[in-house]
Structure formats: C-alpha cells, structure tokens
Length: 100
Image (cartoon, rainbow, N blue to C red; front, side, top):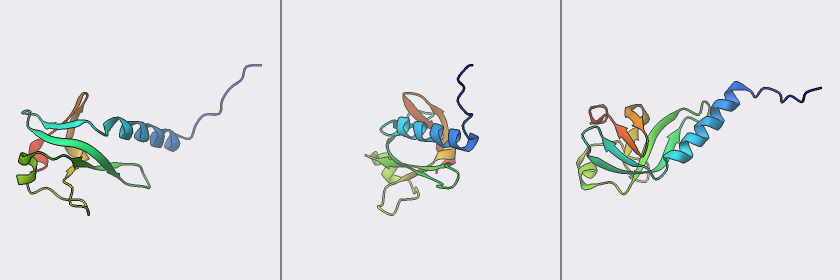
C-alpha cells in the first residue's frame, strides 16, 4: 500500500507561496525600466485575509525617490504599489509611470 499525503488546501498553498515570495523580495534593489534606482525592499505590506501583496516598503531610498510624491508608510517610508512591479530577478523592476 503506497503512502499518500493528503492534498494541501489550495488557499494554504497560495499563502505558503506568498510567504516564500515575500522572503525573496526583502533586500532586493528596486529599479525602473530605464534603470533609475529607487532603493531596497525593506518590508512588504499585504492583505492579511488573502495574502495579496499591496506595497513594497523602501529602505535606503535614493535622492531621486525622495523627490517623488510617493505614498508613505506610517513611519514615513516610501511605498511602491506591488501592482507596479513588472519583473523580478536580481532586481525588482517597476513601471515608473505606474507610481508617479
């Protein structure tokens, strides 16, 4: 008789994947399509019920980023909407037109 593991709840699987993704994003450099550097991902804001990623919280924002009128966290850190992320790899690439 073969051992089988019960199938995981799809919503639990999604949350586990989201947690892995979140850990991989922390510390990555955020850049625009044209190569402008915004800073690094210091934290992530997500919807607790669904696990949906809402914002990237920037740490070490660049002078360029400081000049932009970005939404800020309650601690005054710049926020980038996760919906603006267009590519993930060694860097997080964002569509600058989505955030300014």
